[in-house]
Image (cartoon, rainbow, N blue to C red; front, top):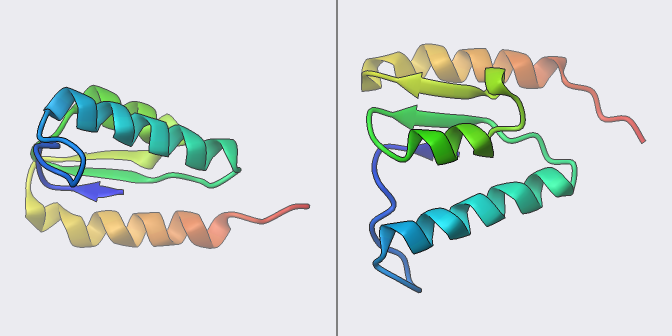
Length: 87
């Protein structure tokens, strides 16, 4: 999940709280299915909700500048490369 702003509009609602709740449900549904969720917040957005969305605290990135995005994505790709799927 990468976001650069507040949840202000979608096809169901224009209410930020409602959209944040839907986002939180989507994140939990992914985690419930065993999907590892990485979250990158670029300057804006509901930091509390987004941090909870990440599968682990270390999978949440709170960027202060868009210039940090390349290094952050490189770190995420390195972590993904270390993940193993076990049945």
